[in-house]
Image 1 (cartoon, rainbow, N blue to C red):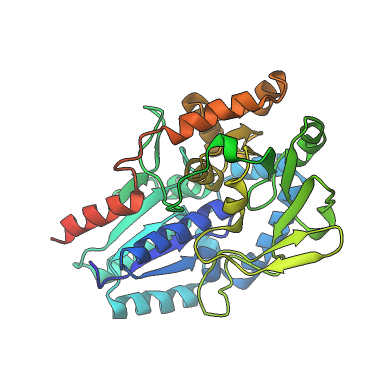
Image 2: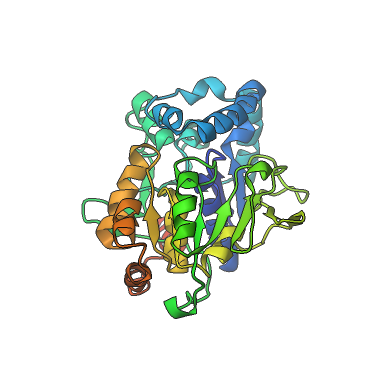
Length: 371
């Protein structure tokens, strides 16, 4: 297995289907296993790709529209650029690619074609569900291809029947800071696409005496002062456009200060927001897949805002049941008490983690299969 390439199949529709793929790729690389990260949108026809940015802007400004879209199944096959996909499949065949991990249901149509090309050789595809229920790409796939997972392996990070965490995506080898070491600050954001009700909470949170690290959707939203900092992904960056080194990377980012906008290079090991969250007392956000991963890795509780789609509703219920998160309304009733946050922090850092590393699980299972 050490000489084989694990192909990480991501999506740019929200960073929750992109950042975890890069994190997993880094973990494989640390084990000496090479990887390649690909993003589905790179293999769409151009007009469909151009429309994604319009959707992103619309969903940022209209969360009800975003939630409506999450319930509408889409047959993504109409958007696939067949010429690009054929070139990709020919390259995979020439390189004898066998090991794949997909974070998006959209890739399964392409993997089905590749599996037919490789017959009777066997490929190994993990369908990696980073939410606790099916996200829209998986639901659409299931509608148009009900038995999509029959030839593949369902890799679920969370077990909602047992309300437990099965596996985790490794982020950092650092031990999370203790609660007493943390700043009296909160991270406030709307996920990778800046969706949801997070902006409406800023005045109350500021009045409660917390410093805020707010992720802006665009530069115009930045209104920094002596207690509130504004950050954002570099607006020139796009998940499905490779960096100057020809690879997909974590996004570069900006800090919006009162004097200027300061641009920073991307961090090689994780998303820049993780470092900021690691110093804060809580994240105030909808419960997206990437936010759950940050919560576990940084030992930081979630103040749960209105979810996007039924998959995030399931995430909401899981985190609340585990005691790793609390609804914004309930925390508000406590008077925005720091003691509530400390209790959740302690639950997170005391969770069992032995045997939970997803990358280790994949390596041991595929090595046995190859043997």
